[in-house]
Length: 82
Ligand SMILES: [Zn+2]
Image (cartoon, rainbow, N blue to C red; front, top):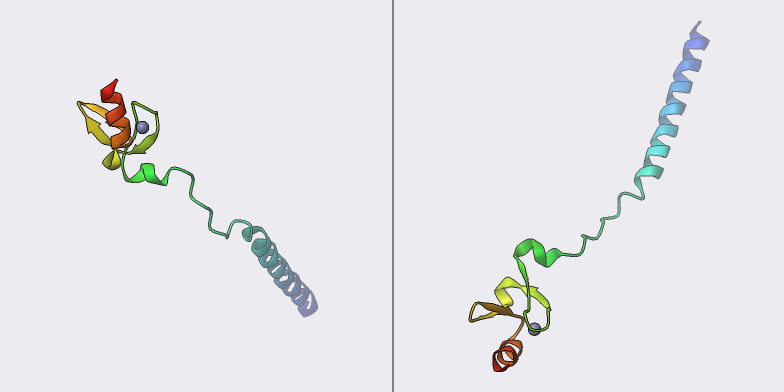
């Protein structure tokens, strides 16, 4: 009677140890921190497209001239000269 109880106890402990090993083995691939998806700059603010060269720049860095959006002063100047 007591032997059977000990057998069940040992089996339970072995299963628990195996389960712990399996869990650590399966949790390892998920543990390294994943690199964030591309588009971190878009989280801060809007990204606008240059009307001249179609380059996408953050809104705070964009050059707005006559209601049109450009990536730089050079693009704004060349667009207005045409
Ligand atoms: Zn541009």
